[in-house]
Image: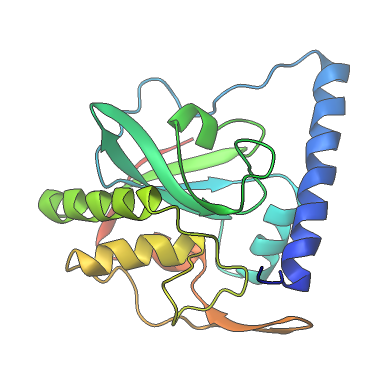
Length: 211
């Protein structure tokens, strides 16, 4: 079994701590977990969605992404008339023993207040390209592709969140952004990768809703 990097292990610990803190805060304030996605927002196949989390893991991403506001992203797919969000994510298992992988979650889950305090929906300028990208994302999800803890942008057998979205749009004939430029040289992690701000700045996407 492939060994996780130190950064991935640290992220898992931070995510657990953030979840415990959120649970205690909700109990204390009497608030309930809810979706931050407004009911008036209609998702389309191929939409690229972004979220910003309040946990330590999200803050680590934002600290690294100097020009960014969001810490995670995914792509909307149509599954028999129901919209789902396909995204590559660590630390969000569906069941005990579930490996970090590409997932397909309901929008209410992706935009749950457990994971997000802000979000945005962006739409491609070509509907046909968007649908092709979405179908490719669904195929990747069905193959249960694992999350890439090494953030290796040259290896698509494993995927991280921005790499997934960039890949499926590229295979649909649309390059959302240029080559990855964010370099990390940390204990256990040496990579050059894309971050959410790279996709968000794409000239091929337009903002539909911010919340």
